[in-house]
Image (spheres, helix red, strand yellow):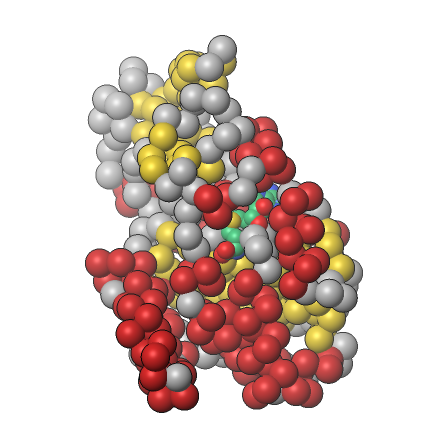
Length: 320
Ligand code: SAH
C-alpha cells in the first residue's frame, strides 16, 4: 500500500480525484496563516523561524497563508523561512510556481533545526497503515498478487484501540505505521526546540475498530486493489493514538476538535462577511464555501484539528 500511494502521488494529479479544504476557499489558508502568526507571537517572536507545510498539494493553502501573513503580521512574514515536505515531483513543480523561495524536503526529519511552525492538511490520511483482522486470533492483511491475504501474527495488541471493545470475527484494526513515529519525532522536536504543528484531517474523536481504507479515483470510491498507483488511498486518522504518542514524547496536545468549530473560532464567518461586503457578487459562493468547510453534515464534523505544541504554547482555536 505504501508503494501504491507513493506511485500515485508521483504520477497522478490527486486533485482530479478529490477536493481539499484549501481548494474550496481561500479563507482556509488565510486563517491557518494567521493561526501560525499568533502562535509565533506566543513563542516570543523568534527570528528566524521555520514555517513548514507537510504535503502542500498545489501550494494553495500556503499561498493564501502567506498573503494573509504579509497583510496582518508583516514582522512574522520577514522572520519566517519557508520549508515544504513533499515527495511528489509534479506537485513540487506546482508548488514552486506559487511559492518561490521555498526549500523542499522528502521527509520531516530533514528539516533544519530551530523553532518550527508546521501546517498539514490531509497529509496524515495519505500515510501507510497496517491492517489486522480478527478470525481465530489476529491476522495481518497483506496485498499479494493483487489481492488481500491474511497471515497469522503474534499480535501487537495495541492498548486502547477499539475503545477496549472485544473484537469479533471479522473485526478490523488499523495501525498508523508511518504516522506514529512521525508524530513522536515531531513532538520531541517542538518540546525541545519550540514551536507547534497543526494537523487537519478526517477521523473519529476516539480510537475505534473498523476498516477505513478507501480508494478514490476520479472523485468516486474505487477498489483499492485495482490498478495500484492510479487511485488515491486514504485511511481515517487515529487522532487519539497519535495524541498519546505526542504526549509521551513531551509535547502538549490540543484537540482534536471538529474542523467546523475550529474554523469558526478562528473567524471563518467574520472573514466570509468581510470579503462578501468587499465583493457582493461573490457573496453566495463565499457563503457556500464556508458552509462546506464548517457544516457538521459536510466537512465540519468528520474533519478535526489537532495541535502538537511546546508546553508553553496555547494555540488559538482549541479552547471553548
Ligand atoms: N495539503 C494539500 C494536499 C493534500 S494531498 C491540500 O490540502 O490540498 C496529500 C499531500 O501529501 C500531497 O501533496 C502528497 O504528494 C503529499 N504526500 C503524501 N504522502 C507523502 C509522504 N510520505 N511524504 C511527503 N509528502 C507526501
